[in-house]
Length: 104
Image 1 (cartoon, rainbow, N blue to C red):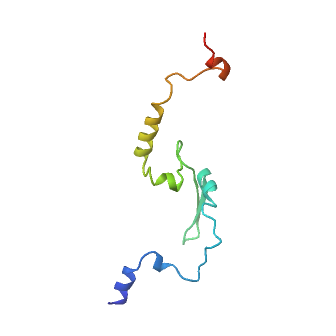
Image 2 (cartoon, rainbow, N blue to C red):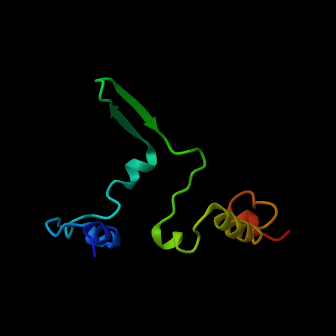
Image 3 (cartoon, rainbow, N blue to C red):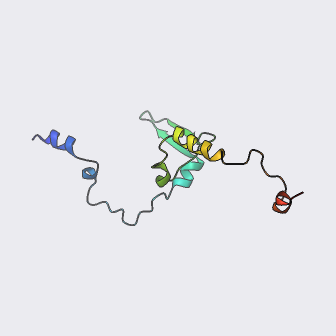
């Protein structure tokens, strides 16, 4: 087998060097900052710099990995939420709990 063929057959795990140690890593350490927005600075070869502000789209919702396994796309999330909404009362209950449950 040629060297090029060996390289293409490698999996993503094979690409990781053994010198890297992520045992003290914290999963999701920067997720809150990423969800609130971030800045990208692009430095071009001609010496110019461009800065871009990246903000999540209005209405964006971020799912935890365990939830994402069940709802891989917007359609599945919306379908589940519409099913849940159907269980809600048609009119929201007004006032505090005592007056809302008091019989007339």
